[in-house]
Image 1 (cartoon, rainbow, N blue to C red):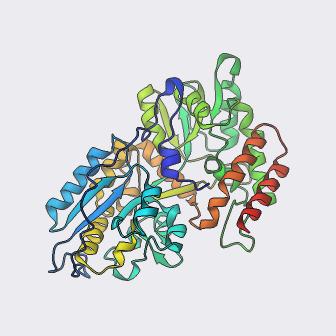
Image 2 (cartoon, rainbow, N blue to C red):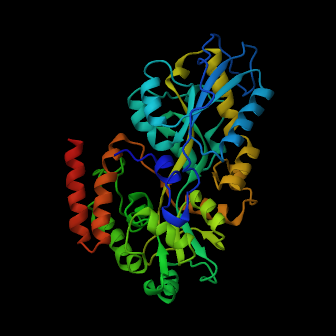
Image 3 (cartoon, helix red, strand yellow):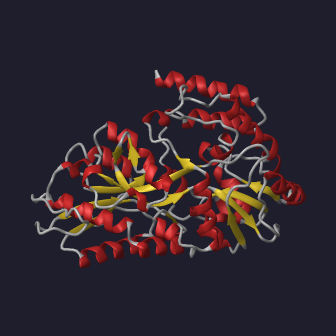
Length: 425
């Protein structure tokens, strides 16, 4: 299974009374007519300004919720009004399917928006290209995590504009002061947890390696790391220690179903002291009227949580190999978009997006909730973009489900590792 974090996380719905999470409303393709604008000529000034070349028209694809679409259309219109170039935006309902079919056929966009973990697979398959030598924007303008995520195998394959990860969300009705350590958190959970009265210490989607990543990495473990001699760390003692830590310290205080919906629902209905979830969750909490706060993940004794982070990029599609006015239009738009402070501030305020432009992320004027997620991003590091990671998610998910249900953690993780290596062969 390939984990499309934007789809799997942002578009996850919570069943029953909780309603829909931000982004779960089905999107339809809009404004998708028109060519890629490959009308020839070069049009990118080395100083970041528009050169005297011809105006270009380029397609930009994205997948957004109904609530996000108006702002995106306004952004594109603002660029078109300010620039001699024209961007034709299209909201795409199945980005992976559409890009993998349209790009090889020469019918795809010049640029498309998606999480950074596509980079390795898409670069290997020739769907995206590196533009390191022609950029008018320095990666130094972005947070280190975002700059790292924009690169794969020495290529800058896109430019970043937002981040996502999980953080600790706490209910102020139960929690007087946000915990800095797991021990502090545990003392509150012990006091609140009363499943007989439908109250819980914690709601955390356990059967998902993404949500558990902070703890799998907390004591030196890892799922997958291309920089290690043994890239697969699923069954390493340090990884097993991290998962066992969650079994011992979190599972006893959670609802008895490890799936997303029951875990997210517990907190959103006001029935849990803590949740571990991402910024996409805040719209639901606001709709439900939960009085909450957000802080970075608490430290376990002897370790440090390191959650996976996802960075949203505007990718450079294969069509940007062409040195034409349409490529200049797409590049001009992407560079404008990712360095526009107002766009990042508005996204943070309206949708809970975590800005990665340093001037905004480190400006000190983010809301407390977004700052909490931003601090959590700094705790972690980007999800692996190597295509081999695609074979890791499902076996680890199965192992985590076994661990949650009381099976031996070491045995479950070893089974997962064996399956992954078999799939790699």
